[in-house]
Length: 134
Image 1 (cartoon, rainbow, N blue to C red):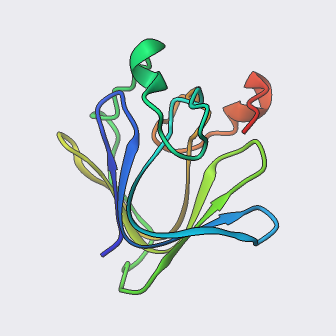
Image 2 (cartoon, helix red, strand yellow):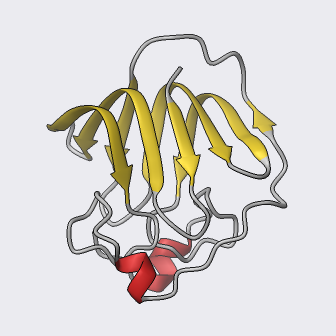
């Protein structure tokens, strides 16, 4: 199972069959374990460089309700780095929080990487208002 662990006020810990792509479809990397930025401040986007610690990034996803869009299944997940936008996940995956448990299980969702969403860890479109540049 492809897993995206939302660390408390930190990056996404990603494990599984992961394929990172640019918005134009160009493959950036194939990974089995990596840490992706969700505070929006990393100088190594999409990867975490620890900027969340210096910038006091805060996120309380413990109150989020679980959202299921169907059986996740098995196989790789494509992580598309939307231009100045979210991480679009396509393929079987779970998004988990260490306290709240499973936040999402399914085959398609979008995760915030600007750090400004009011629905963290999920994207709510705030990156447009915030002027996020990836």
